[in-house]
Image 1 (tube, one colour):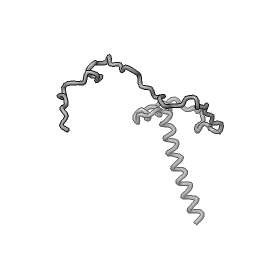
Image 2: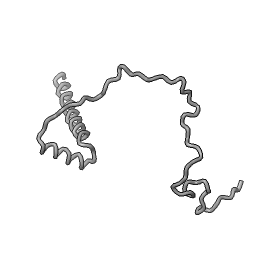
Image 3: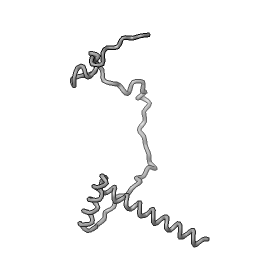
Image 4: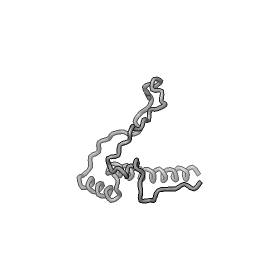
Length: 106
């Protein structure tokens, strides 16, 4: 079972590197092969609701610039950064309220 392999610096004539960037396969890949497209039905999700809401928030321009600066430092979009900060603060608040509630019940 000792097969001879071409040297590493020789490429197969059909390999993309052998033809440069002009390589085009004879047939494009067909991802629908074996699919029964006649049995397809339009999907409907009447109970699906958006998991977020659009809001409008007014804030001082200096605050918006600072938020954008901090978001840029973390390489995240500023709106995502605002959500991260709010979620973190709400998480802390929720934990402190839980502690207070459990302490009051004891």
